[in-house]
Length: 66
Image (tube, rainbow, N blue to C red; front, side, top):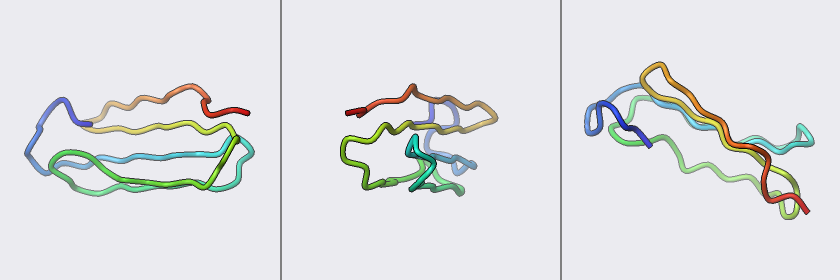
């Protein structure tokens, strides 16, 4: 979710990725608040989130493992 330029249309992106390199969910574009939602069918498989806005980005660690 944006913390700068909230309510103003700017480029943002989000990615949800399977650890195995399989299915990936992506969304990007010019939005007022956030990109997404994105979905990956990965029951019990490690996944991670990454996203960015206003030239900054962040990634999570692997989760949902097992």
